[in-house]
Amino acid sequence: MTAEGTAHDPLPISLVAHHVFCPRRAWLKAMGEKTDTRQMAVGLAEHHASDDPASSRPGTLRAVEVASQDLGVIGRCDLVQLDDDGAATVVEYKATPVRNRAEVTEPMTVQLALQAQALRESGCTVKGAAV
Image (spheres, rainbow, N blue to C red):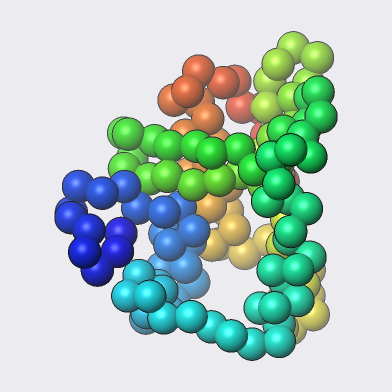
């Protein structure tokens, strides 16, 4: 929701995940604050391929827009992998954190859960999620 938005605007899933990580950081992001660090620049550059829906292939969908009216959230899945039966696995790409430990964090889990629910609401069978 932007500063001009209303309480009825859907929340970006990424903002919900930011809030789980740090409520203050989420508030700053919602107010338009930017974090311009070298780590952010590297992460954005490495994430570029997953932001291009044109790089999708049969069974591998990139930059899939999702929304849940029930939960009031919107977002984008980095990748949705479909198996032979059409069941989906949601995949989120993340850069190695500052601590240099590759681990699945609570904000990542929340982000994947919201994305999976939004896919389910659109009629998709979701069989898994991965980081």
